Length: 262
Ligand code: CIR
Image: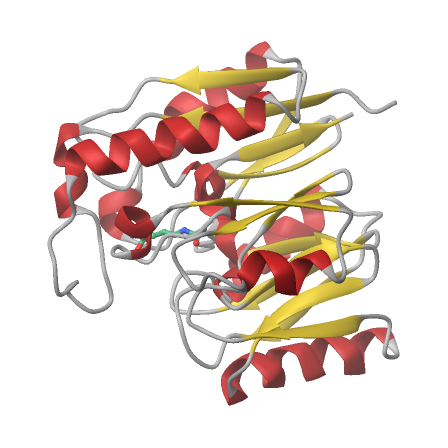
């Protein structure tokens, strides 16, 4: 059986200053954010052999969104160059943790920028969203880091990242947010893979961003009470977790962890 490790990063005191495309109607509540983060970490503890907790760094309000700092497949990682200037440097601590785990590290070549939230690894293929955070040079670095894996570039028409609107919920099955820009991204994936995936449409912003570990899906409990039942039709196990404070600053479920399976 694959050995699984999750890496997470704590919520800094500065988290209320995290980037957000539109200012939330209610400000982030730091205490609630920390409780929600702890609940998320507890769920992961039940799913993987080890959860490594990297301390928060107040210099980086967005540092809990650790997914954006690296793309890891097996024993190899590409350390990203985050697309947002205020997030550059978050990757330094993560590089060290990955090195300690014996993971072989590649770096993004200038002028590349890439956020892990734009990268979906599914069915042995990589899909890289070309977005406001991830550019063509960043995607080239991704291909160089994983030469034997085909990287498909996908235009992110709307929203922050590719995985903000679609993610894997079961083998060959993607949850896709039910809006035009998201289904256009799915169509591009289908066109590039000869219709490889099945689509499960999901209503509500962010609801299609889920974490899949083995046959268990973690989904947001904040974004609709029927989400669990919806996903249960396609996934063996579904665990909802409240993520309201992270959604306020454009975060979802995948952003809060880096999963290593090897
Ligand atoms: C940002 O704008 O960078 C953060 N506030 C949210 C990052 C979410 N990350 C992700 O979807 N992978």
